[in-house]
Length: 274
Picture 1 (cartoon, rainbow, N blue to C red):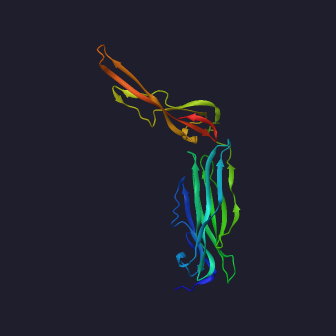
Picture 2: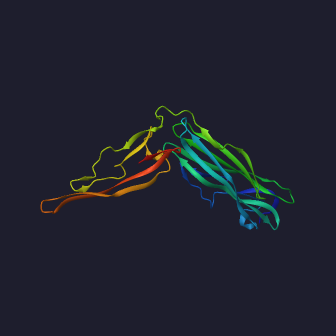
Picture 3: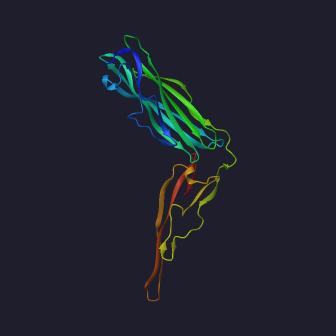
């Protein structure tokens, strides 16, 4: 058994892990966390009287391009359990990490988030130790622009308090868009998708709903997924066209409904169709 020293705080758990990789959250809260515990302790469950989890306010880091369009956004909270003691001595930290609120990336963009845990420190005294650890979130965005990284650090402590360190958070502009990104004009509506397609050919349905559709979107938008807050699909009543011969015998019949998605907006502006 290693000698346990309550006054010396060491880190357990993972020192570095990925929270988002190429736009997908990959955090596994079962293993992706850090703790600040007495030297000689390797398993936080050896300590008693844990409280929490405590959580911070929500922070976000968002990147927009030169025309104000959102490219990537990551929102999170710092979380940790606190108050664990060793036979009544000390207040330590475990399962310190983050909870993801939002991980958004526009089609052309790549969002990556890394979490680092560092600096296990005794913020109390030798007789009444308070363990603490820094949780550092690094948010990287790249797409048509070079990679940009912003960092936010929070110190979380065994008494349930926290202290915000250096933290770049909020909305950041990226350099002007490259010339192949057209300016977007919400007040001019253009058509995307297919202008004409066959739904039935020689009695057989040939409709492919993944590509056989049209949309009405802002000029400069080429993909309907660039817009947010889509609703639907809505659908009309059923219509039919039927042909009979002179004897009243049905020869052909086609029945259908019109369908569409609606309400998509561009950063809160407009209501479009796809």
